[in-house]
Image (cartoon, rainbow over all chains, first blue to last red; front, side, top):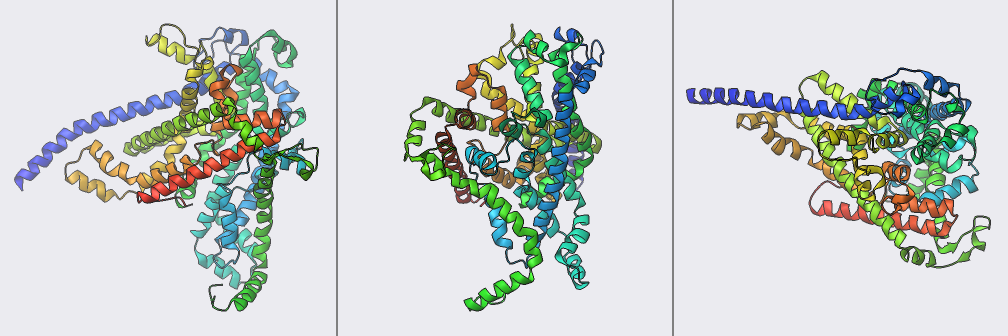
Length: 308
Length: 317
């Protein structure tokens, strides 16, 4: 008994030093990881607030060398950028609302075990995660058959319901007590009312998660603009505009670009700082919102992937 | 519904009867069913264009049937084989990098006891997931430029003597794609492993401690076995996507970062399809390449699933 106690004490002391070293190592690695993650982002923010011609010299790290707001002034005064910003906001808002309403309504019906079509509809939806017709047939359907190309609705309609999000919401609804629905039905509420007045309010945490997923997806996409609306500058989105800036500044930062672009008319901005400013503007809305939703999406993601 | 299945006619009648009773549920779900049939199943009809010399200006069946000519054309082109090679190379590198980095991060976060620090690390490492691929590729291009931070760092450490042309040399391309993926998704991918770890019974750790197991031993013998089933399920899912599945990064990074100079390393099957299908309007040939991709994806998914089942691991299907 005594020996055991002594032994345990010895182990305890030895492992304390080891524990400390272990924790120190992990802390240092994680700190390094945070630096690696943040550096490219902060670097771009610093460049966006820097004077344009000065920025060409390079050597800016995470703080602007010659502070200047000219890039932002130039970008925000540009009508093309402003219109792209509005299109991005509009597509994100409309997509998110439609997605939430349609997906959660469907998820509710598929959570009702007594619903006769439940298995069939679930199967049809789950299969879409594995069967995909591919780019060309989808393109032909959307732009030729349905004639959705060159319109705002091509940003919304083809991605209105996602199977993954449906499963996430359905799993959450199944976890709610059945008695809620039962008692509402006894009180004479119809399905739509049960869904809208009882289930939907209780689903707020999972709806916040799905809203974030949908909003991020819609805000960040550029390929639909590239494919369907490239010829319509009025419908260009912020990400598409940034993609084009990326291509032009990458190819060469030649004078042709700065002479054609109204943005670079001032001496104090250059393609580098303009690009940085547009990057910051197009990342900002999500960066501001997502930390507040962190605890929701962490659970949402775990539910959807483990049990789905 | 579950009452009796013995007499079919009665069952059938009760099916329609229940359906009418449940008309509100039908109203709330059948429009979505029609939607998904139109947008996800109707395009499958377009697969027949792979066997035609298809011109969209003509009605579908006025087009010339060409049998397997489009497929023969594909497999006679070295460009297509290069695209297959590039797709697999980038997917495999990305899959390995992503899985290892996510598990390592999750294990480390799982060991951190200070709540605040853990949360801060999580918030920071999840951040890049929310940036668009356009932004991420832009950031990568400035980091890996000849006068970018990566070259500066490596030169000041003495690893290299002169700047390396990371973005313009094909031999670095696949690895850059992997590294960019890791930068963007490690934090996000660790979430699922972390939640699997939180489901491990704490009594296991206590018992191991009693037996004198150190930290590393506990990680090796409890934490890692505890996330095995999650690991296998994700692996099966991802193997189905090796040929360029739904992860947008598989298309976006090579498309946004590739230049004509690098095309032998950067062109994936999706980019090949886009080039021939949309830019050159060779719909039949591009659809054939798309079908090839879908078929390989299904075969990969099913074989990975079968292997997992044979090994007595949890399966997806």
